[in-house]
Length: 129
Image (cartoon, rainbow, N blue to C red):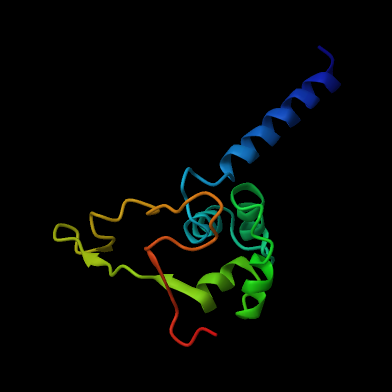
């Protein structure tokens, strides 16, 4: 194997890894996916993660970008700054005294494939257009 072949193999492996790391999980809603991607990779001031979700999970949701923009949401982090908030209250852990999620919150509560609606972990922010 030549050096060029080795580089090409590594590039393919990295592309596959990037694909796997940034794929929505089975049943994961748009909000949980976008929140997870922002926590891992941050916001690039575009709708990159919501667009990726739409392409992979809801390709028929042509109006997603328009709907987000009409709500003043111009990038992925705006989804949470302007549009949606966690609907579940945190609790205080008795042992550590730290604020945490209640035991029944173990991740996304799931949506059907093709949906861009949030799961029941999310609620519209007050004053949202």
